[in-house]
Length: 529
View 1 (tube, rainbow, N blue to C red):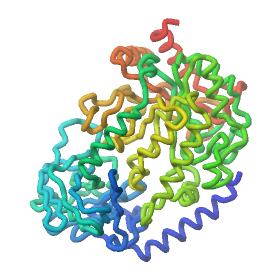
View 2 (view 1 turned 120 degrees about the vertical axis):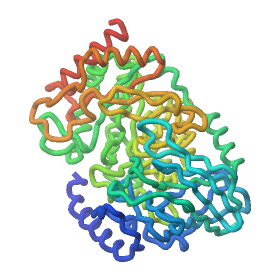
View 3 (view 1 turned 60 degrees about the vertical axis):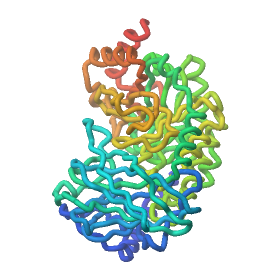
View 4 (view 1 turned 90 degrees about the vertical axis):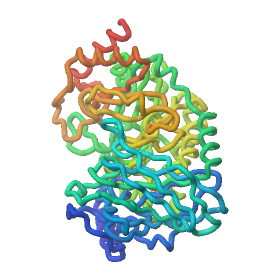
């Protein structure tokens, strides 16, 4: 209701903001693709020298490449996810300059997230401190499409403001039409720098030790073998509703038949449910004062989340939450502005503080009944550029349950934080798994417990349903049965999604009957009943 009335004004405001910011945006080199998408200058609008990034004391600080000053043939990415990275570097004269404010004089270990089809010689320099090293060669197929490299040696920084330059002194990079859609999570066929990460060696080691000390317990997921993923999205449609759920958000929560929902979940044999607390629009189906403090009108009086947790628990089924920080979907601009998610701001701590408050209140409200946040989406592509303090997020999630598991999603890239407990890559319709060679301490996906996420039919209904299910399982039933048996044998828990109607009631099939038949076959094969 409130979203619908505000949508027009929000859209006008965003257009005005975009036009205003474009006038002041720093000019960047054009890319060969001549894309018409949004320019990075609309987000990273300030002179980098006037906004040095403050490095955290005794911790890690991340800085996306778009926050640096550029010289020569360097251009920024396009679109929602591409604007944080930069490409080009066609000659030794093309370079970035990062401005950082160090709390004290010290040696800093450096890592980067980047992509390159060829090995390039990279140079990092700050004052008299210079590191020259070859780029890490990708030796794996598919994800991660961009990857992390821990740079050997250290950079010596003085207390106060320092300049760190980056260039490819012997560049062999050539312009390519593939550059026009540069995105942070897809390898574009030429050199792309996404970010640098700075922290003293001692701080990095201490961070790893703290992460291990509070690591969540996912053994129950291995024992349970598989769970069900359910999207209760702001962008989804009901059985006979023409409007997106966001337009009848309060009604959708009031009418939700929890017992009928649990009855259907039980038919699948799932040992747990991962339920979207938010998705494609930050609408929270329960009380949460921290959400109200950011923007009123996005919570409900009914605690649907508690009711779901309790009803599933009565049937021996655990509950995890999925989280989407509201970066896209329904009316993201007013929410992200209120949340403090301003990529170009000198101080982005408000975003972190608000997210921590929301997560902490949620954890304390549900306590040990809630098994954790198994999948926090968009962490690399959308939240990482705001330099979140992931440890604070993790401790907030574990405030009510120290054993809670956390999955910070990196999608097609490397892990965002050692405070992630679960592998959170999803394969869509594919029945695959994360490459075990990329999981472990110091590896691309980090020291996480293997897990896999996929769907039977689709994530959620994306258009009006008109009283019928369209489509169905993407693969034959026997393919799912064989896959679940294989993953159970390997000890890798699978969370599989079935699309659900936005109106959860017993007067229509809330899940596709064909998909339900697949899951009942899986239940019989895995559970023996």
